[in-house]
Amino acid sequence: MQVREQIKQHQTWLLALVVITALSLAAVMPAQAGDGARPVGVVHPQHQVFNDNLVVEAGQIYDGDVVVYNGDVTVEDGGRISGSLIVYSGDIDIEQGGVVSGDLTAVSGDVQIDGRVGGSVAVLSGDAELSDTASVGGDVSVVSGSLERDRGAQVGGSTLRGPQLNIQIPPIIAPGAVPGVDVRPDMPPFSATRPVSLSERLLGFFGRAVAAGAALVLIVGGAMAAAALRPQLAAEVRTALRRQPALSFAVGLLVNMVGVAVIGFMFVTICLAPPAFLLGLALLAANVVGLSGSGAAVADRLPINLGESHVARTAVGVALPGAVIALLWLLGGCFAFFGYGFALLLASFGLGAFLVKLLKLGEPAVTGAAPAEPVAPAPAVPAVVAEPVAAAEAPAESGAVASN
Image (tube, rainbow, N blue to C red):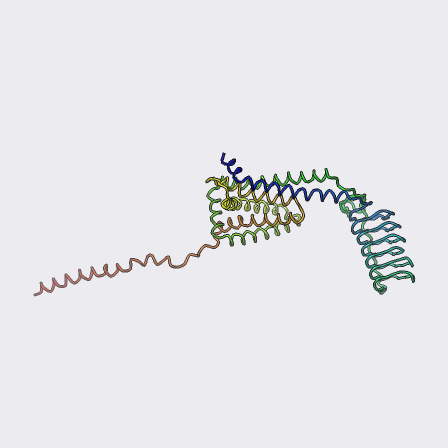
């Protein structure tokens, strides 16, 4: 009943949130579908070729840079490489009508240019020949090789022919030449890409939504469990966050950033991957414990009466900003960047408050004034000494009377 009353009371804000979410999705999804539906030719992604020749046929467009190891490259009339072309130990032939939009680099191979190169041409340990139909937008440099240029060849920059260095480029190891060693990277073969349909984009969006929802449920559930099992600890974390918010944020942000960097570095090395996994679990658990306190602190600022239940306040305080973060991640692009930043800020407040409470940071240090308490009975010392003196005088007087 209380939840229904709160929904009725704030139905205007809830309706506005739904409308904004629907408009955001409507603005993103059609744009993505339109991008995929544009008619394109035969487009290839960025590739690397090992121990094989590459022929860019008429009508083919290779989108991105192309790197070839131990193989010849031919760009036929009507073929195009929209990025740069780099060939190690192989010849290059750019036929008339063929285009390389970026730079052209050949190492240990000859270059024949009859078409157009948008950038510069660099040849190391090979010969270069530019026919009268060649067009180069940048410089032409040849080191340890000869350069032949016809009068009709157009070069936008300067031409340079370096000394004979006799550089020998070792051939790339052929795949399968060494048992158990595969030098070919794991990548799809050359194939023409096709536009992604709207149904596939919707399916991918649904999969990301399910993953984001599952992660949100796990985080909220962990914070609720921490608040239910250790209510005193959660209350102390919330108190520490209220008393020292700046210190809590600074400590939490520092620990999160350093922790992620260390864990990432450890995962790079194979031998340190298991301890890195354990360290990551510990950092995640500490953040969840911190959310059990920071979530309640967030709920305190909401115009919703959640009663005195600390678990309910924690759930609402973590779920609401978590839903916003999940939505930003689903939208992608710059929205995902802001979502990651928002998540880091929220987690840093809670983690920092937990560490401030655990390590007792920011509390005043114990001074040497405590030993002053035993000195308080000092005024009673003269009274205690005076009594024996009086007692001693009394016998002296009595002795004097007796002598008289």
